[in-house]
Image 1: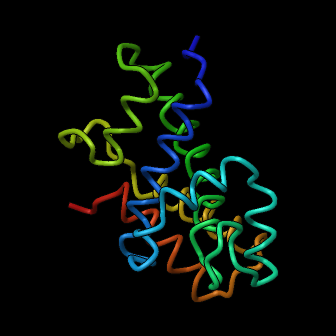
Image 2 (image 1 turned 45 degrees about the vertical axis):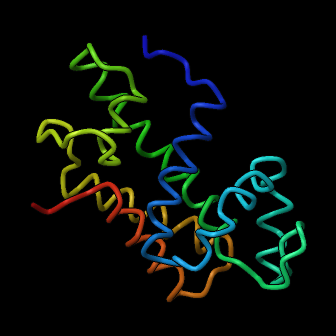
Length: 157
């Protein structure tokens, strides 16, 4: 049986992955990423609802941000990655799901046995697009986020 995920560990991975994606999608928001992520994880629905309505985030910034939406997309992308990696973990044994996800996120040395296939990367991209659409993001933002998340975890090299 796959080790159960702790909430803090999953949130950490979601935040790390989202921060990597925002490096490409919205680098100007990285300066307030930690505060935005903290607010998002405290009440994801409220943070995403504010974005959907074009409102400022709750800690006083006077601009609408993509980061809460990106964290929501990152959450469903992480679930897809956990599913993909869990399948591999059951087959291969040894490594924990979190260490394999970290390797996908290039936090450790790349390993050809761990990289996503083209099909798996496409599945992750579609999950990201679906979540972005569900949040009502404009198509250009949805595509940028989806491509940024895939770029953070998949290399064609």
